[in-house]
Image (cartoon, rainbow, N blue to C red; front, side):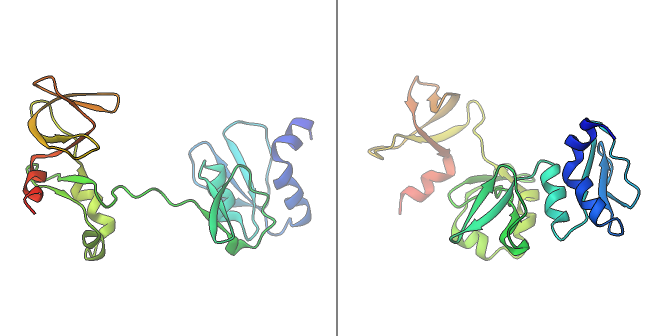
Length: 192
């Protein structure tokens, strides 16, 4: 056994030495994880091992590049390198950010003229919210699309055609520049 092997797989080797009957999980390149009781511990960039302990699901996710979080005073905090010393219940894989949030303008993929602004009740009443991402996409203006523009002071709203976005500013075909934009459907909400 070389120093490189020990350095590369130290944690899994120590686990295996003390728990040979439980084995270690191994993964090569993009293949699936396999439980093995005969690890080789080669030094190869695409080869990973994790101990087959109570944290193995979290360990595998960490090796695959997911962020592991630890709860501290009721707040989930990202960990750079988990040490796995806390109780299993205090760790989790950081959830993916939701595709949409309240206030986002979304377009129906099958009916491109159907654009809505998501509200709280859109999430609460949607029985299959996890599938909403299959039916909708974030609305982005197309060149020459009629839109509503305004600045942060909400002093006035302007309806013009979208030309381009530069940095955080939206430009219209009439050389106007604004900080905020919404689809033309937004104008319907202004009468209230």
